[in-house]
Length: 112
Image 1 (cartoon, rainbow, N blue to C red):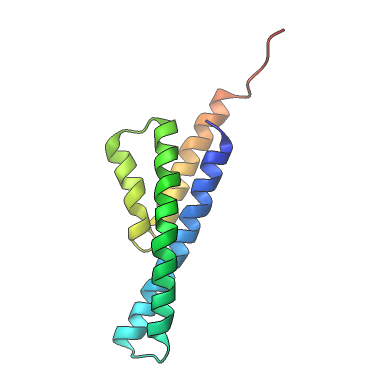
Image 2: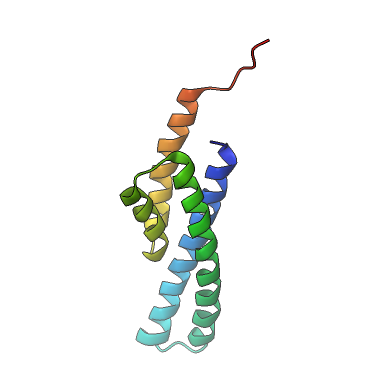
C-alpha cells in the first residue's frame, strides 16, 4: 500500500472532523443561543461538510480495501466522520496501526 493512500485519508479525516465540530458549534449558536448569522454559517458549513464527507468516504473505503480490513472495522472508520471529534481519534489510531505495518514491511529492494 502506498503512503499517499494513508495521507489523503488523514487529510480528509481532519477536514471532515473540523467541519463537523464547526457545524456543532453553529447548531448550538443557532438553536440554543439564538446567535445572529448562525443560520447562514450553519448552512454553509453543513453543505461543505456534506460534500467533503463523501470524499472522506471514498478515501476511507479505498484505504480499508487496500489494508484488507474486515467489514466491521471499515464501517467504524466510515462512521467516524459523523460523530463530532471521533474522526480525530479514529484517524490517529488507524495512522499508528498502518504506519507500524508499513515500517515492518520495509522498503522494496530490486534484485539484479
